[in-house]
Length: 338
Image (cartoon, rainbow, N blue to C red):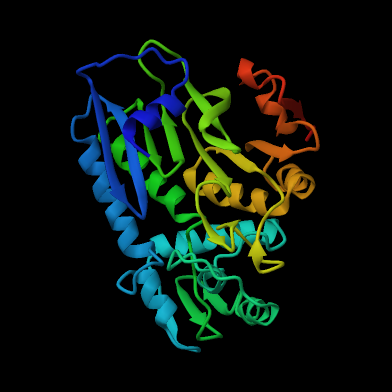
């Protein structure tokens, strides 16, 4: 996604023009495009890019040279000392895994490989192949700052949480430099810091999951992270059928319960991981997860009904989500109680 697209899609209603105080940046990293803006700090782009590169060196599952890659290569019963960054991601992953009843699983790497997402060439697996991968899920022991795999072929994949963690790191580094206003977008994992000049909030567009180049609704946000999970951004095509990249650990197959799940949270790592879990769970179980474990998190769930798509939102967004006029005859907005 190009920088212009980021600004058009995310800053709906913002009339900001070119300002010498604003540093805009864009670069490729972590298998996607990152971009953003920062006020009154011209080196923001360099700082954010360096931060993302450091996180990628630790958490990438696409290379054997990363710390996570080395862990994936470890043999069974070999204890590996892990860094604080990897430990944080694993700890948060395990928390979401427990709370979601296993809908989020950091060891889904074998399933991602089986379906062809690593080589970007789809493969429709047999039930036997799927069962073999499912047997590898959770095959490790995590003890404070170390990991011991119980199955050599258990492979970690932090694709559902690493980008949110990277955004958190970048925001912390910008704040340390005195930046109070700006946004960082890492492949759709976004943190909105402060607000744009002359406004109290960022006006944020929610993508139409049936047409990712369009905005279906908008909300106002400040000092929050936003992450959306959906099958429209990354998929493989097998025999003319598209399969999304978000795996359901219960079935070993791509999740299909929602069109998209958007989470608004205090941190990027929670927004990223939780949006994945909600997408896997589907609408009813997703609502229960939010009610029982994440009462302070806001979410937007888009579900395909027979006649109209339904946008189900948490109570805190009631009155702070506006459906764009051209979608009012195609989408319905409702909220659920805590």
